[in-house]
Image (cartoon, rainbow, N blue to C red):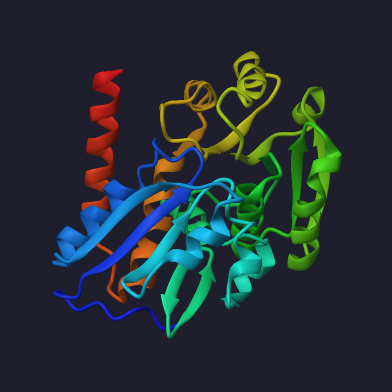
Length: 288
């Protein structure tokens, strides 16, 4: 881990989350709650709409007051060649969700993996048996690294087009994992899954939810990285089926906590961040 930026209470620093679209992001609420709890009155955190084309110029435009950035779709892979240093984990998974500015360098990290591990462990979910991952994007790659860290060396991945799984297969090879690619459909019901991880949009997972509802597919634990709106059709169906259900909100809080620690050099106030995030999600539900 690189040396984080200095974080004196009176030192004004800036941070932000970048992505496209970004208006829905809960990250500003979580990070601002952390700054308030830590007494970092001079720190600010915003959301900036940014796509892959704009990313290089935006990075070049940031001044010395910037402490770091959170990255979401579609920037986690695109940022890698723009960094001066990338931690081994982010290199392994081919994605950085965090940039820290320190010593005149742009340093990339991946806190998604730790966020997934913590969310699963706190829910009491283990990964020693059959694991099924839905999707093959950057979050799916982080999910592979997370379950590998928990002791799993073989995983099944459901994709709609196997040609899109090249990056994921490269990550699996780097991690020393075996991957079996499956099509969405009856093949998913070939065994009982100890853990099912969905890294795809809620609508994309609806056919899998239908299989759970029909009893043709079974999973002891279901982790859906989507957190708003909640529950997703997959999560609601899994709950009715008796599965242990983990929300993407849990992953989000813990990956954000990792970012706060990297950017500020201070232990993240996870409870305060969780409370603020839940309050914001409740507010959003009330205005829909």
